Length: 165
Image: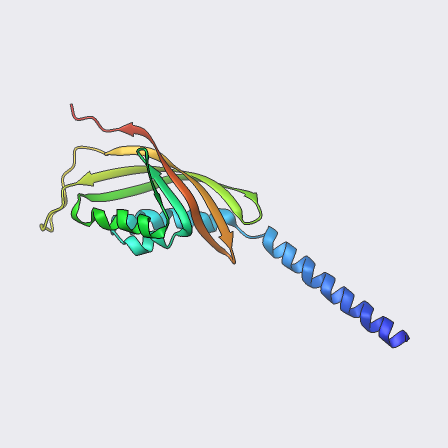
């Protein structure tokens, strides 16, 4: 009887240690680093017109809203990016990024983006542009699962646009 009690007590202590370890691991997860990486990956993959790569940064039901249009689901997001393959060349420059964890597995973020647009060309020379096309903010909601940060929703909020004089 005493052996059974001691064994049960040891198992209880081991289980408690395991649960505390799991809780500490979740609390120490760096949402800011993981989700900031997704923000940077989006800019690079978007400029490369990698539709599948961009879509994979979103949850299955993720959404992207820009200029009053919303693209919902990975397939719609992928098609939007692939449609840009024949359009102008873009460069998305990400600067300020602020990520906050709102609850376990959830985060919100705001990042600043400056977008340059130039005509597509077969030339190897640099493309001449007058100035930036726009400066704005991405307002993101993230889901973090198994150490992976994915975009649940992203909205582009324009702040400045370039005006030819």
